[in-house]
Length: 539
Image (tube, rainbow, N blue to C red; front, side, top):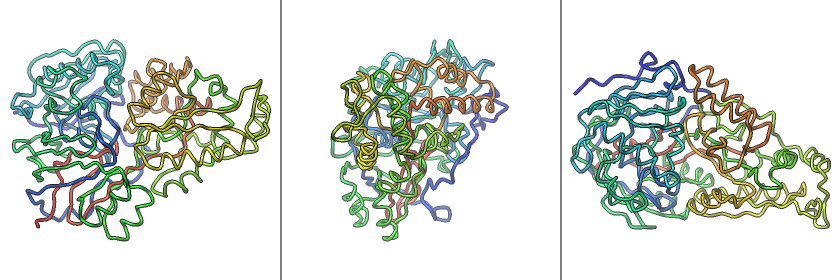
C-alpha cells in the first residue's frame, strides 16, 4: 500500500481546489468531553430522524438531510472536507492534481479498499460510478456537479482521470459529497430507479444495510474489515458500534421525549423550541451552521408576477427577517445576509440590499401600478397580487416561518398561497414550473452552489441573465482562490440586486445526544458524518 499523503496546496492547481475557510463561524460540530475518554467497542445506537429516507441510492433523490445521514454510512468519498478548515483531505483518494485550466483531475487511489461484497475498489469503480450518474440524468441529485463532463479515464487500477470540456474548479469539492460516493459493480447492475430500497447498494463504507422498512426504520450493521476512514476522524479501523438504527419519528416532541427517556441514543432535526428542554435535561447538543444556500424565497422568472423586479424588491422590503428568525427559530440560527450562508467559503455580505421597510415596499408597489383592493390585497389590470409558494415539509419551522412571512406581506398588499409537500413532489413542481416562489435552502460547503441554483443550465427558477451566467461560469474556471472568491462576491451582488432570491435565515443543524453517547459529529456540509467514531458507554 502507498503511504497516505496530505493534499497540500503544492499538489494542486492554485485554484479553489484546496479550500480555505472563509468567514466561518465557530461550529459546535461534535459531542464534547470525548477527548479524554476511551472508546468502547460494541453496542447498538438508535438515532431518531424525522423523515423516511425515500431512497437509499446515494446519488438518487431522497428526503434531504435524513437520507444523507443514512447513506453517508454506506459509501465513502474520494476526498474528505475538513469541517474546521474546509480544506480537502485524503479518503479513498490519497491525492489529486489538476491541469492548468481545471479540466482534467487526476486522483491517486488507495489500493487496500474493498466493497462490502468483497470486491476491490479500483479506478474502474470510480469511472463506473460517475458514468452511472451521468446516465441517470435528472434522476440523480448529483448530475449538476458534472457540468462539461466528457469522460473518466482509467489510467491503471489505482489512478483515474476525470475529464471536462470546460473548466470545473468546483469538482474536487463535489467529490467529498455523499452523492458522489463510490458504489460497487453489483449496484450498477441494477437499474438506477430500482435501487431506492438499498438492497443493491454496495459501498465501501463502515456499515452495510441490514433491513429497511419504509416509514419505520433503517438498520445498519458494521463491517469488521473497514480500515480507511479519513485520518482526521481519529479511527483507522472498524466502527465501534455493532449496529445503527435510524428510526423514523416524524413528531419532534416525540423525538425529544424519547431522548429524555432513553428510548433513543440520539435524535436529528432538533426543533428550536426543544433546545432549552434538552439543555435543561443536561443532554448535549451537536450543532453547526449550514454552509450553502440560505433559506429564502427564490422567484420563478417565468411567472408573470414574480418576474417583475419591482414586486420582488417590494417583497424583500416587506419581510422582517429578524422577526421570522426570532419567532420560528432561535439565536443558533443566523438572519440571512446573502444567497450564501455566512460559513460558506466565498460568502459576501449583501445585507444592504435587504432590510425591513414596509413604507418603501408600499411605494414600490404603488409606482408599479399595484392598487389595494377592498380586502387590502393589491390588484393591477384585473390581476390580483397573489403568488403560490412551494416548500418542503422536512423541516418543522418551515411552516411557521412561511406563515409569518405570509402575515407580513399581507400588510403591504401581497397575498401568498402556501403549498407544502415532501421532497419528490416539491421537485416535480419545480421542474414543471408550477410555482411563483420556492422556499428552501441547500447545504454545500462551496460557493459553486450558486451555479447549481441560478445558472441558466440548471436553475428551476427560469433565470436568463447573461451577466449572472458569465459570473457563475467564470468562478468555475477561476485559477486562483482569491479571484474565485471575488467573482462569487460579484455573483452574490447580482443575485441580491436583482432580487432573484431573498435570504431570510440560515439553517443550523442540531442533533440531540443521549447520556453516555460519544463521537457523533457534523461534517463540513453540517450533515451527519460517518459514525465510524461513534460509541456508547458500557452498560
